[in-house]
Image (cartoon, rainbow, N blue to C red):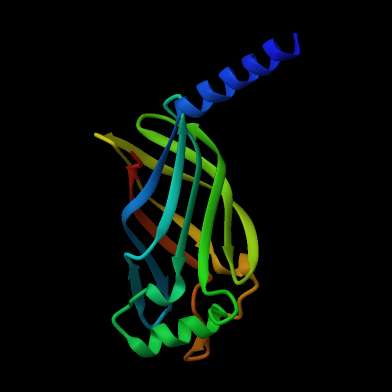
Length: 178
């Protein structure tokens, strides 16, 4: 009896493992846009690392991390000030992690997870477009992040602070592990 229960458990575990596929982030483009009454700017990074897990054709988990120092706004002075404001020496990466992924309308998925920035985790719900190609899953889309959620002291210029909300755009291409 014990042997048959153990065997059944192993078969179920193997079946679940067989149905689970993993994908590594193969290429990425992550863009943020910041705003101030005097000027707007954009920073871009292509250095994200990430993992996506799919089970029985449904996305189960996604994790993405990006070094803050990899964002380039075409102004080294602005980039170094951003690293200071974001406390990048103590917390050098921004992270997103989700274990709650639901199909949404059309070709989109809704991810409920958390961003971690400045050592602080905040829950976020974002919608991204999902496209499948041969052995690849692509997630793309736009959303907003509020910097005040992460206990940051935003800089001021001409006596006005930069806007606390930034626009994010992601283009993430996950390649299936073989």
